[in-house]
Length: 345
Ligand SMILES: [Zn+2]
Image 1 (cartoon, rainbow, N blue to C red):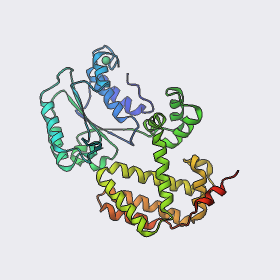
Image 2: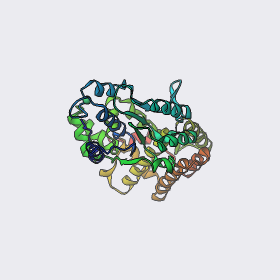
Image 3: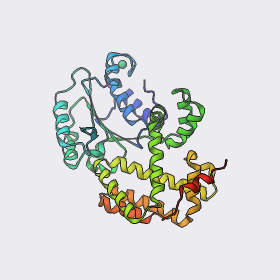
Image 4: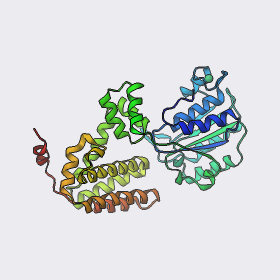
């Protein structure tokens, strides 16, 4: 079954290519994280290897083995683990291993499917090696590059892949999916759909693992705290984040996105657009910051976050980029007891 919620356009593109036997040698699935790219890659692998008359049936041995990650012809290449942490890059020896296995042809199915996720974490060496494989694609192999940041891939790789774009889902559609299929209560569904920003996968994860929401709130708390920190503390935090960035780019990029969302909420509160605020559950905090800053400093904080994100994407010195960010944030005197007394009884 090609069933995947909220990605009708991407599904239709693959379904018709499959029906017309025009499946490409290589695809690039692009879009925000947690919206179904990897799921659809697995469904494509099922369609290509399903034993039944209406592929993908989701139930035959092949379909089930693929869903469980046990099928010998479906390989998922990701960042290797180093202890309990994922390495920063997909490295060349992993690509060499792919080269070797694809040259052998399919083993238990009809097609070999190689899913590279997240593809943009292939380092330069790995990308160059991968390009060679793409230039002379073996028969009966389909590559799917899954990416949230396609601009970090070589143009020559991108031009050899058929691009499939995944869209962010409207909050209403996420809320009803959470409510109907994942049995969330209406309040939970509404809260998570708002926070998910179009990513159904994130909402499902947050529903099943409450620590996700707690970590998110903690990162907002950290931002708020740093506004009353002195320069020394701010720079120490920037150094700490730069070290985290060296280990995991996506984690820090995600954090900057969250902070941007939080500042946008502050701006909305200042403008009196309370209904539009994403983080409704943090409204008192947001109001406190909105009162303590002027409009210009909020705008400057948002611009600084965007600039930091851009600089990190284009390989600027991470520590410097983050230090500049923390210099641009307003300096506020926030006393916690004021927050509490501000809450109506
Ligand atoms: Zn099947």
